[in-house]
Length: 357
Length: 275
Image (cartoon, rainbow over all chains, first blue to last red):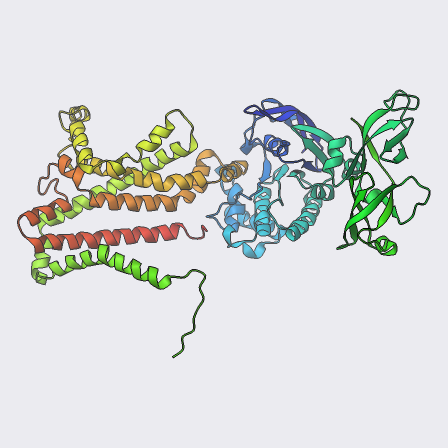
């Protein structure tokens, strides 16, 4: 089922949590709402679910207006950040809940409920724990129970609020992969909220980057990572070095460095135009590092700290003008360069992103 | 003889345990033991006739029955009060919240006098009830009313924090799974509150059993009609029948102990798997 959000606005007290959001989630897609806390992503998810009502705007399911529909009639499965399992019920009873509370004429027979719950528990790999209570499960297992419970009512839309937020790093990684596989299996339209860019980029078909109640960018993980629409997205999707500089005559200049930055005629900073102040963004892995000047425009810097734990070596440097610079390079490059703390190196960017002030 | 010295991070077990036992002994166990000792001056036969006399039997029944009714009434309305105090924000909520504690602080004699004035046939409520042929003061109903009054805070104050801690997300989860409001209350909220409600019930029951001050004002103290067990004990004492008084006291002790025990078992059962 497709979801369409039209000009949705939500205000809490004086705080605008959602500010005219427009968004379409095509049927069967897995979409991530990514943003810092307070960006409105959870509020948007709750508006889709019907747990929160929008002050303005509409929510459409398959083209049909569902704005006034109560959460229990929306046919959504909602997975809460802290699971919200029923503590006094067993895992089995938790999963069966949605079927047991149906009006009598729609309620499946006992044997059928048992059958369906067993199948769901198998799907989330918990078939042997049906008689346990939530308190006896680990965080990852609880999250999977919550998911099975939401799936039991055969929702047309699955909504997950920070599904892995409360788990430790390894379980998170496992569940992430597992959720992606699960989605490929059952193909239910899914929206999940996260503040972890890695999680969003890895799991989702498309990523919605949100900030201050607005959508900053919507695109595939590749899109938003490599072609960020603005400064905010650039900052939010991973580490980045920022330099203040200007664009002049098709070149971006910052420090004692310049890179080609062709600008179409008529746009600010185009050739022959006035110089224009700009911010230059360089991702840590976009630096070429060499021990000697090699003719390319380069920034001189001194290595202050090295972290070589992992396949990618992290370098902290100080440029000649006193700005801290962060760089990453593959382990074999690092070994070939024989870098040490205190060493002088030359940095040239392979790729930059420029946003005007 | 060598003794393995265990280094506990929390020292002072011996001291605190000794202190606790001494204190409990002085305050609780020795008085109770005296009770049994006093009773022991009676022969079995005397004891049996004292504690199974018509007047005594009636007093037990009245005390326990009225206490049970009062505790149940408070379970219902205390739960409701706690729910309102936790879930809704309205002007005067703070005052209402403070009022709940009033029966804790109010001397029971004051409660008795005011209830009596209100429910006596000439009082505001009493006159109204009289019109429907219901007598409150100087009747068993008055005893129940007094007990309800003094034991109300117990249910409210035990249920309130549990309700406040109840994650609203759990109710939202139930709603998103298609549960109607009453289904959510019955299947999700109520089971979560039940253990604390039973605790509150036990406390209210215990408090009602022990209530004396306010009841003597409102009940009229007619033997065989509105005489509660505590009052019967007092009457026996005034007749210098110490052994008789303690015998009845021992029975009350046994009964309340049994009742509290039953409720504790219920509580353990309802709390299974909760933590």
